[in-house]
Length: 289
Image (tube, rainbow, N blue to C red; front, side, top):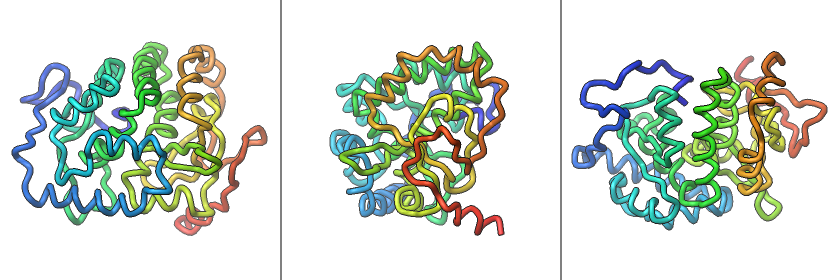
């Protein structure tokens, strides 16, 4: 989210008042398209059996298997027919109020640049592969599409209440790094996982991280890692339950209740947690050592 990195306080030259810009699809090079294809092929070798069924359905419905970086207009036409969302290009990270306003109105903001071939495994700022491959397939699912629109509305309210830090944690642990239970198994749906070959494996198969059932207040108190694998992943029982919690909860009293509570450490397991797997934290401890 925009609050995690410095952003400009006004649209840069060439951007519209709402910070959108043309995608510039004709300007992509053959190498740019080849980089997308390399990343796509690598992830598709890993995701069947690991990714949520909703994510895989979205890939098919939006025809993301076609070669090369998608044209946002064509992609948006397919997506809008399914759930009313469109994809709009922006020049990098945008201010929080802009981000939430677009989201509340079913416009997903996406960077239009793609990483270099030597950056396949890690990129600090989200690129078009992270934003489009990672996020957009889930927006083809009606329930998750409604959740993200509700989150956008909630984000605007959180700005008014001075509680953005707490709500940002919910985004991080669901939209970016969420796990879901499907047919008795854990599956990935968060964009930060499904767009990363290494975290796809780590989040599901490594013994290091904790995997804990999602509780709104708990999540909104929990710190997170922006520079490495997560030390705790939160699990939802279904997208329907995530949407229900978001719509039926008045977040203002939750913000008040947790406002002065200490943050929960990234590796903590609390007595009240419903633990799916308690992690060894071997990976993080090894890096620290």
